Length: 295
Image (tube, rainbow, N blue to C red):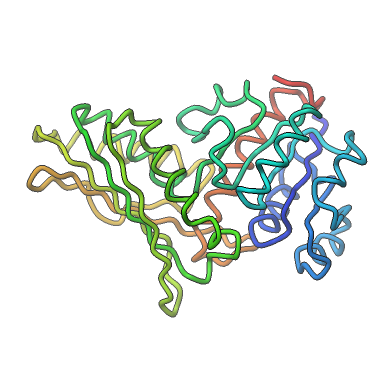
């Protein structure tokens, strides 16, 4: 099958990790790696790999609309709002790795097929990708739940400039994602940047308040099934503790260890985003049979 051409916007850690993953894909080919910084290490790396690069960001696509069918946007929430307008008019299939809250929310194991019929795919946040599948499983087991809380801890070193300036957007986007996929009445999301040395792996703690004592065996079975499904595209997902039930609250702690493609393994919070984005893009490519037409 002919590979589908993709462009990557954003040449920082996330964009460079995407580049490494795309380069080994059987269905995708990177035709453009574009950002704004002339001093970007990502740009230099892409050039060494023989990839076409640009420091004109989305304008490079506007000059050559035929250069790609899929666009990964790993810039920031504010920039994606602008990119979506111009790329939408060009008919590009967009994968948004920023917390812009603009496009169709996608968590691959929950709604991948449905997502492919939309043009702008919103991958929510790293907290959303790593925890929403588990929150959904908990909600299926305890449908009367009215409140879910997520507390995520990531290594401070894994939080780049875009992550830091988008903290408020991250919290809101993650909360909205939990509410959307679980139907819970109230949700809360928190993010802690941990400066510990050596850097910690991403940890997520889910709390769920429920009035009825749940069948913890059924919950555990559902949670383990989620782990197996997620490992198909994010092998570093693990259960750390739980699920346990105590005094009206179910608690589950999970972690994400990165693949170490470009990002360090402790940056599982970033790796799960790039893994999810590539999984969606590859499924899109399979359905277009390499021709770039909408599935």
